[in-house]
Length: 376
Ligand code: SAM
Image (cartoon, rainbow, N blue to C red; front, side):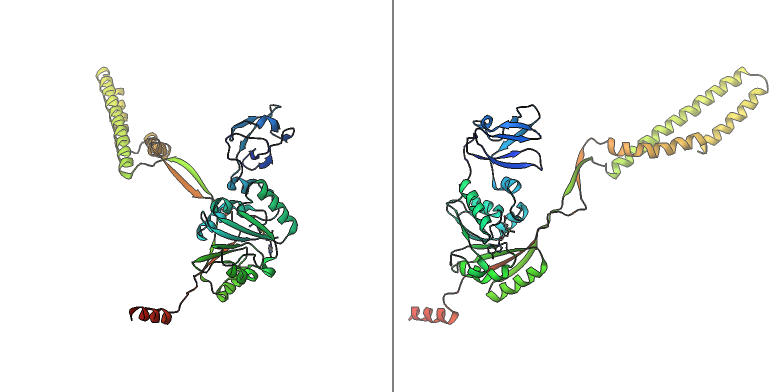
């Protein structure tokens, strides 16, 4: 599948990463140019460059990255001919259907080939993918792509209406995946395609509940078991790094320390005032000195009772202004926190899974009589 060389060569399918939202595939063709708002590039300049290179534009307008295609990148970059499956669903389906190297998978419809690319890589050279598409132009385009991407050994694409005409294979598939408007019409055919000598699985991808209900009914009637439905939802989380808040013990110790400092300062101020006052009294013989003593005494009493206006204001300002600093800034370590963003993106469909158990070759009484024959 695709080039396995580290260097870009003429004729390679490459993915150009312009921005997170602009990811495009193209075939490296000497003589052609790539023009974008991030500048223009000659395909021939890419030849011999390692995959993953950052390439500067010829007219100095920007740069691009040239990446080797993977099924994941292909899903992000492919030309849409239909709605496609995205990675969250693809990964879940692949896992639940137990698709692995060597598996035989039947898929309908092919559509834009997003799912086909992923499972072709998963089943590998020892596996097989039978893909069906009833839209002729889409089938032809997908066949071309599979050829260009070196997948034709593994994928066989058939232009066919599977609901009407069924599949071209019988008793071979480990798994069937149906992404069709009316999957219930293809379930009987899917049963024929699935192997009967060991557990086989099916998944139907449908956007609405009415389709799920019809599919479930059909699966039940056809003899599938373990019918179960999932919905894959993507919930974006906003992640931030914030300072760790100190424990209550640490925070209260900090508060006590500040309190002690403030009290020391207050006592120092009183002592200074007293000293100043005593000094004045010594120097003064007249009555004015007594008046000053009374005034100072009043101030002292007020301050001790904490009713002094200036003190009270300072205390309030300390609580509101310094609490966040002392709690957050005092501790150097940080923690990563996240919150779920309100929007839910990524719902594409409901996934209905079911299992086809191996056909029992002999019934219980047969087994019992066989055992008795063995014993005698
Ligand atoms: N799973 C594909 C992907 O990831 O790119 C997208 C499949 S697309 C949503 C559904 C496709 O099924 C369409 O291309 C449509 O033409 C095809 N289709 C619909 N009914 C069909 C049928 N009865 N037999 C074969 N293909 C059918």
